[in-house]
Amino acid sequence: MFEGFSQRDIEGPAGRLRTLQGGRGAPLLLLHGHPQTHAMWHAVAGELAKVFTVVMMDLRGYGDSVRIASDADHQAYSKRTMAQDAVAVMQACGFSRFQVLAHDRGARVAHRLAADHPDAVERLMLLDIAPTLAMYGNTTDVFARAYWHWFFLIQPPPLPEALIESDPVRYVRSVMGKRHAGLAAFAPAALAEYERCAQIPGTAASICEDYRASAGIDLVHDRADVAAGLRLGA
Image (cartoon, rainbow, N blue to C red; front, top):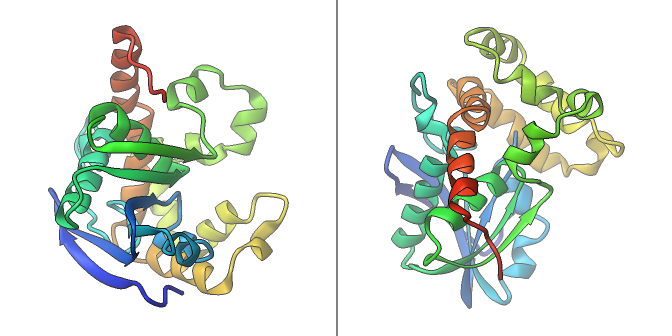
């Protein structure tokens, strides 16, 4: 899927982070969503590499990146911690300042990345999200039905983990296929990659911790930003 890109495992703050790099030009970091991996960029990475040095990474807990145990506060999967992974990856690639294109969960990491590391982020494009604080603060029955996994994944362990682990492929297909286009919208090779990675031990726990962090420690950080008057803008 990524002809012309080189694969590299970078040692991040908590362990291995899977990356792919290719192209020439200004550095551009791509961050994926849930329950995806860097494979989600397969259709655009080659085009972007014509004008950018493209760096793709698997977020911690996803793809072939490290899975680690979390704590009661879910700090290990806070977007602040995951943003530090992204900075470490780009520094290891030789970039102290870069642009970011991010989707879904990756966009939440990128939002925190820009807030915590403004000197590192030159430009930022966030796809398919509203701020987490706004999402929870404006929850309706329509939202809760469409985004059921937001509320399922944050339930106390080990129930969500056990249910996902009982059939991880079915979980991926359920989440990915819930939109109007269904699974037909996804390239078979990319979908197969998501399914493979969902079966790696520790993935279910990592996904749950990602979402639990968003419903807890991430909101603490976001509220602190609001109280301080922090805004992201041009």
